[in-house]
Image (cartoon, rainbow, N blue to C red):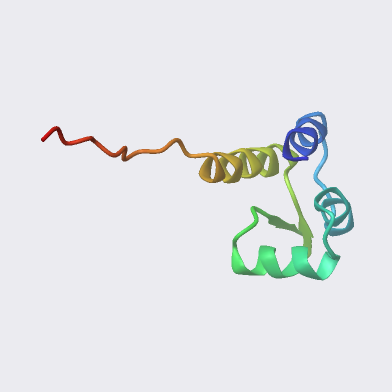
Length: 81
């Protein structure tokens, strides 16, 4: 799912509204409002309304995906007896 959403976001040119982001992420608008208020979702205010830059959301999703798919950093080393 994240790849398809990233592609949709990267193809958008205009700022998105809360409802549009909620539909893309399959969550409620209230959840999007909360994430924006906490600063966990990149957002901006235009004339008092919350809007989302689709390019920034795509970057945010890619970063979240990379956090989930980290390569193993510590490997066990076998000790020869």
